[in-house]
Amino acid sequence: MSGARQVKFYQVGSLAAGNRLLAPALRSGQADPDRSNALTCGHRACQGCGEALGARYVLDAAQRASGGKVIAVNATGCLEVFSTPYPETSWQLPWLHSLFGNAPAVAAGVAAALRAQGRTDVRVIGQGGDGGTVDIGLGCLSGMFERDDDVLYVCYDNEAYMNTGVQRSGATPPAARTATTQTGAPFGQGKSLPLIAMAHGIPYVATATVAGLRDLEAKVHRAMGMRGARYLHVLVPCPLGWGTASHDTVRVARLAERCGLFPVFEAVDGEVTDVTPIRRRIPVEEYLRPQKRYAHLFEPEVRTDVIARLQRAADRNVARFGLAEEEAP
Image (cartoon, rainbow, N blue to C red; front, side, top):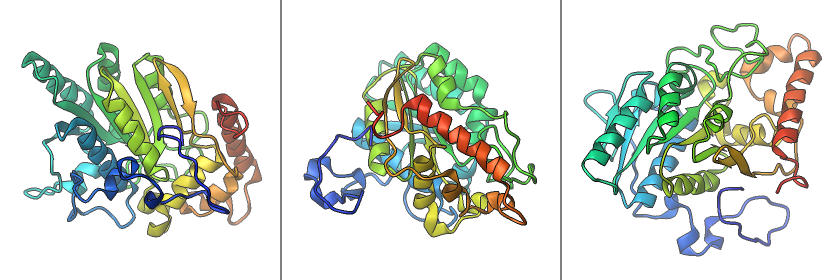
């Protein structure tokens, strides 16, 4: 992993290492019985929801890094809907619900108000799904980047508008079937928000997945240690929209990393500074097959032409970010 402190383990035949092998101070925040539980139990997320898992780790890590002084601004979307059905809430921190597209602007306003009050101890996080970030909120987010507002913005990317019925978003990958792309999302469209964020030259940009939760925690800690506009893009599989088993959420996220379609990296001031190398790289087909949104690529006949295009996209990511294990810095 690129974000977490490197620790040498001596295990044979496994790429996993448990918390129990680490000193208590280095263990995951989730292993702490006194963790903040920023997103606590009782919410209404689907079974296996990657967004709920990612958000809990992000906010608990941010609370830990800031001494519990965090204000979160949440765009409309899945995360807001399942966590706050009025008059209930699962949030155990100061939390504001904004419109679908203006969470970055509201978060920037909160940060400005704190600055006017001389409060440098309270930190601000904006968060939303890929629809509210990549599409509807892009203008507000670009403005937040351009002004270098002191906000960490987190996008939980499940690659479509899942809350409203699995419609295509600007983050939907090519060939993925959604309610509005019945034959598969087109090639040549869509956006890479991490690369757009890097083009703004902001202090910190990083990607992560729920398959690397220690890496995710470490990147939140790193971002919270900085000032100015920061951006974290987290891949969070959606069992409902992706057509995967609820118990496969973490496994599918890991396959996305291992095939190269989702590069995991960090960038400082617009330059890539670290990547998570791919160990035991797999062909994209192993990532596509478990997902019903790609079932049309395998039945009634195997679409080798489309799979080959996706494989080339993964190959380009590996080359562009130096993800092959022997190439990683």
